[in-house]
Length: 383
Image 1 (cartoon, helix red, strand yellow):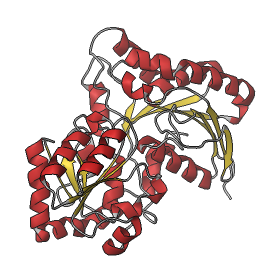
Image 2 (image 1 turned 90 degrees about the horizontal axis):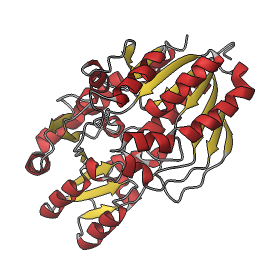
Image 3 (image 1 turned 135 degrees about the horizontal axis):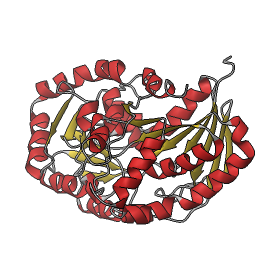
Image 4 (image 1 turned 180 degrees about the horizontal axis):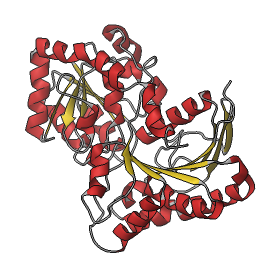
């Protein structure tokens, strides 16, 4: 039994049952912190980008996890505002600040550390830090490509991040955007996601395909938010040209109807809808190759870590922090053009020896790089 562990306030607009890489990371974070004896308090919204999912306003989990979710409107509004940072700030920040302030007024003595997720939650954290005299950690999960080097927004970002005791970027690519601009964050450190390696593990290929009801043939898998910048339409175009290969798509978002239509029109394309993260291992294990065709700068790409943990190599984009989660022994990363991705998928379909060489190194790489020991890169800053 752990004694005298700190109380940690997690501030985030996005938390489960909303589905996404950040949400999965936060589920893992609060679960392991709870195992280690921390007292966890989460202030968040109802699901903003995942539709038709039930949620609880107040929830107690584990030994000491308290989650408060506040109903908020949205559907796909967040996706529509991603290129408009000021409007996105107004959408995500003021109400969560108001509710978090009320929480802190009555619970501040229980909190030792405020851990804010992203810039919007970071802005809330700065005010709460000053008012209640708490330690503030800000974690960054994304590359903010819509931020200019000049004007009010960089000034505000610099003020937010430099007000934290420590700012943690999930990859060098995330941190680089601030070091190479006018923002210049003084206390910027790197951390890394981890994967539950006991859960995300290799399984029998044929049994996995039978379990989820897909054909037993060469298979390419995509898992992610169904938005245009993820490269979904590009991968569908490639799938239409490679009808001898099965393509599976998993996720939720604005392109669901597009994938439903593609699935109806092409027998080798199957849209499986949204799948809870806990249930994903069998889907990863149904694939020969995982594809991440992102057309933008990814912060890291958690899904590639889960795929590799299951023994499935990655083909995809070399943009952003994706390459930091992988190496050449388990992946082929390149400029995510139609021809590059198509030719690489075709090559692995034909060259079984090359495919097996990539698969052989996956699990060992995962155990060396994706373990729960990565938690220490965060908790060392709680002190």
